[in-house]
Image (tube, rainbow, N blue to C red; front, side):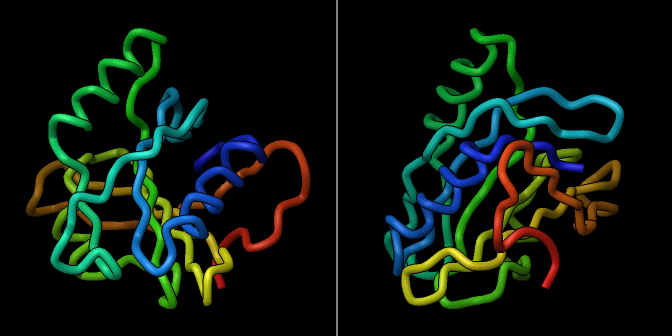
Length: 153
């Protein structure tokens, strides 16, 4: 399960709206225990894909290391990543799967249709190696207000 506060959840969705028609991307910091990734904060990352930013994203390794260090200074770990799918469903693509390597992390995808955030889904990357990894649908628990666009379609 992915646990996130309403303001953090909305920040991820708003990021997708702001970068439309390109994909946004970012890192979720928090703690992971008992099969729950609890997100404390999200950090926006730059999408370094210049060839197809409308349907791909990439976070520069240097930026990822900086975000990881920033989190550790606060006692937080990377518990997942988020990105948007402009005018496409909130479902992982073969490219999303091929480029996912953080086992145990949550991968959140928000469908942004014509500039408005719609469905948001999360997928946990499970397995023990690159050869056995797989995405499993993961429920999202948003604390605070009742939030539209949550969960499987």
